Image: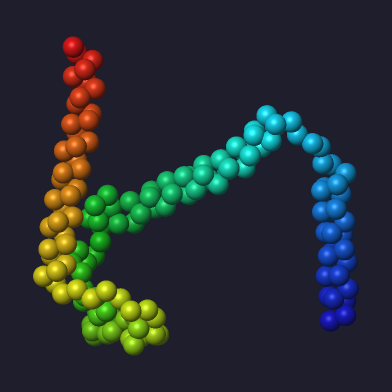
Length: 143
């Protein structure tokens, strides 16, 4: 145990020495344009990295469930609100249910159906708007 403690302490000392060297000996003052360039660089890295992670997650989602969920085994919601069907039994989930948890919004099947219809209508309206935007530049180019 003493050898592990000694190794960790040694690692910590060496790490602190490297940090001190990097933050003092290698530090070069940057001009304003350099500060702007480095700020932009450090700001852009998580944005671009996050975009690539999202694209990977989307492709995995499409591989697993299909473009519109066609690969799903159960296309209809089983249970509703704070109830679900596990191994053929209806069980409560969320607060007061299995493993505690938080309170979930509860809605019956008619509310779920109403929400589905409204969501489909919104998507249809959005598709029409996007198609209209696509056609408008084409029509402007023909004039």
